[in-house]
Length: 439
Ligand code: ASP
Image (cartoon, rainbow, N blue to C red; front, top):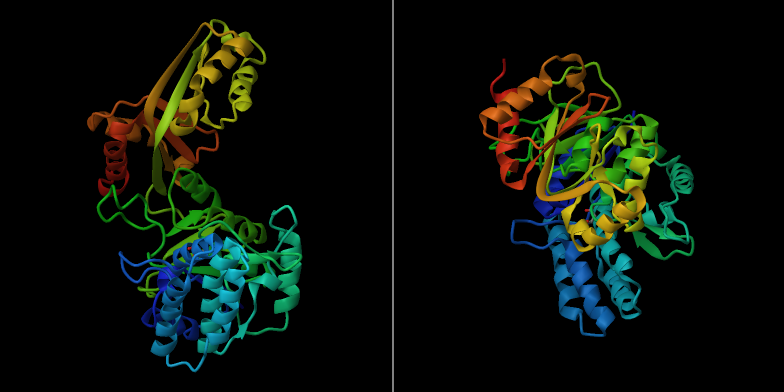
């Protein structure tokens, strides 16, 4: 049995947090592979070390003096080392970093030092072997992540290692130059390590006890989600729910390894399990609600559209020609609507409209802005009658006008379009009907 445990920045922001992490790891011998982030914020006004590194490197690149900024970063680490009473010295590491900054080693190199240094401290603190991610997480020359080569390298390197720390967020090109994933990318590293060592579980430790059914900025103290499938999570993440890096799902999903999102500050909580499939019913018919504001609906009418072969393709071509991706395309007999992101579409709307006229010759086009889309997601909807009915009667009671409804045939989600102004009210009404008032 082996577990891969990834700890986010807030879990490693101070010596006090490091101690909690140490206790968690020592409490379970199966927690053998540890993936740390860089130190995050100690409180709301603090700055993440990753952001400090980017800012410091910006100065270096401009040829300005960056000593004070680098010193502030050094102090963040020293505070952790002292708090843990370690003998480790990062003096030489900082000399190398300073030299490389002067030689303009790149902002990816700069940012990666956050995880690298935290990994060194973590390895020393736990007595685990340190494995530099630059040697085992690899990118091809065009900047694409090389999943298969990485898997092989990680497998070879970790095969005979019992306990290791592998810093998150970065890897390297074949020539050794460091490259990072996008922000929050330590989640991806954890997932890659889990796949390579064939872990039983990938534990992702953060500062919340897993996912919540709805956004706590909209719903007061929403309930947590116990179990969610990869597919459900993908639907919610796509609609803006954020806790876990989206690209981190694929490596473990392929290998069938469940992910357990846990809270470093409340290790007794079970957190959320992300699984491939489950026969466990979720507590409620719905698993989660997420949504986003700022969409635009482009309504296209044409008599006899239903019998015109290729009409939809021509309309979508107009969007493609202008480099605009579409989100949803609900359609009727003589109408079709294309939902797009307003900020992307705004500047190109007239080009798109004329392209639709040229390519598809519609009778009429109307654009309506300030839409919000809400996804109500739940594997339980498939086997429960009346879910849509409950959603829409709740929305009617809350005086929310529904402008669009889209239910995929998977019956995993229902997408609802409302005006931006109704967004929060709609989410509250849906949450209440399924979670607070159970019938
Ligand atoms: N430290 C990086 C960031 O702030 C990566 C991570 O934490 O996952 O984005």
